[in-house]
Image 1 (cartoon, chains in turn blue, yellow):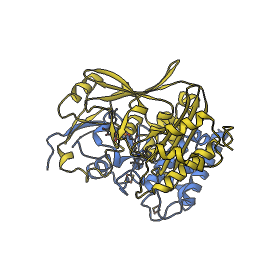
Image 2 (cartoon, rainbow over the protein chains, first blue to last red):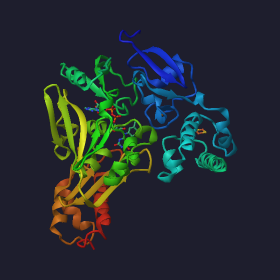
Image 3 (cartoon, rainbow over the protein chains, first blue to last red):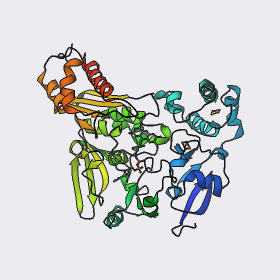
Image 4 (spheres, each protein chain N blue to C red):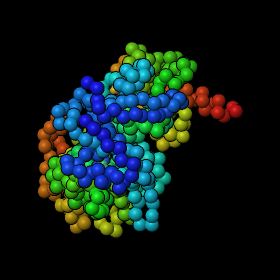
Length: 160
Length: 278
Ligand SMILES: Cc1cc2nc3c(=O)[nH]c(=O)nc-3n(C[C@H](O)[C@H](O)[C@H](O)COP(=O)(O)OP(=O)(O)OC[C@H]3O[C@@H](n4cnc5c(N)ncnc54)[C@H](O)[C@@H]3O)c2cc1C
Ligand code: FES
Ligand code: FES
């Protein structure tokens, strides 16, 4: 049923300005997947537990299943589609993905963490990854993929 | 359903004065769980008031005698705040135990207060720091002590036409600040027992969560601590705790477990801190 109270939302999506009409009840996860054809973010639980729907809201990980789309007006959203494919290589090498259901969300949080190595002064990788559940890998592969990646970023940073 | 998006605090208060009052939405981490499947007939006709764009409400301000958290302050804002880290480390301890980064980046302290879960993690530390809640409506502003804010399960001193605009925390010098959360696992878990203890020149404050229909101060335990009476085992706390709390059996735990764990937490946390505890 069309909603008479549609709201026009303008925001930045993966670096590009976008304008779209949404219903007040639309969740960002559904807008991305079904209106914008960005199907990388997955729905696992729909209640903020699993992190399969993780996107960046103004650069910080958030669960798109808990964001009403109208709220992103004027803000920046980045999805897994914005992440370069080579960001996956450390994860692949360490066996961080099996069935793949959690992987888009895991990679989003992992890439954020790699861009903010200062967080590791106060937090462990496991604490920062606690919002991304994985039923397959037992997490060690994920943690290894991130710490290996952090190490090589660190080395690169030091070299330059 | 309908969403109202005020552009100023005055406009928000004017809209809240409507009858029935629209329901505020901030970080939406409580409201959107299972959305939209949980949009029942009532929610379909409900009107929401989105305050998330009121940027005046997103600030952490340190003054000489008080730290103010604007109503849109998130857990992640607090984790990043040097002012909070310096003076109120328990705010960071509690924030880091809320859900996950994805929840911390969205959930607000004010939302935690109004959601009024007896097992919340933000409320106990705020109460142990003697915080007050600033409530604003079209007809004016008032300030309520958080330890007098709740009167029963989800019963609180906020009228539907009032918005929390800020949380104010007096800056005192503390020699004891302890936060404990006991859950089934470390991350992404709802508390079975929560505890926040502080001691300053104003005395002891012992706040317990998930052991009563609302988060509350354990005043008999506080009186026991003030008295300096000897406490030689968790059992010596049992009587005071029994007077203060009323835990229930539910899917997460039992009455007996909650009461015993609370006694043990207090005992082991204060042993070595207080000479009366041996
Ligand atoms: C996966 C998951 C894990 C969680 N883990 C924890 C946890 O470990 N510990 C914990 O304590 N909580 C937890 N929560 C609950 C939730 O994140 C917090 O209660 C959060 O602080 C709510 O804030 P919000 O801004 O998202 O609230 P919203 O969902 O926007 O609102 C919550 C309530 O507060 C009202 N409200 C919000 N702001 C105001 C205001 N300024 N004035 C008046 N009323 C207002 C709303 O009308 C609503 O009734 C979790 C939630 C999820 C989904
Ligand atoms: S689908 Fe959003 S957290 Fe699980
Ligand atoms: S790889 Fe299957 S859930 Fe993580």
